[in-house]
Amino acid sequence: MRLAFGEDVTVLHCTDPSIKGLRGRFVGESMKIFQLERGGRLISVPKSGSAILLEGSGEVLLCDEMVGRLEERLARGSRY
Image (cartoon, rainbow, N blue to C red; front, side, top):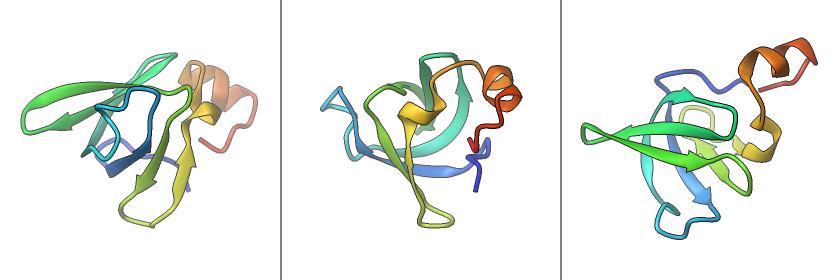
């Protein structure tokens, strides 16, 4: 399964301990971070060293696999 914009996620692990356990809606990404919306605020989460739970499917996603630009990941055939 791919991570979809608007999907609800929970941060299971993060290099920033203040973000661990955070729940929010996936709203955007750049090469090294993804953004969650929570209560009208945007939270930036580093991809490297993070793991998230996709609430809809229960799947755990290791965000290290998401490092890089979306178009580059698609070109190399990445799952995410």
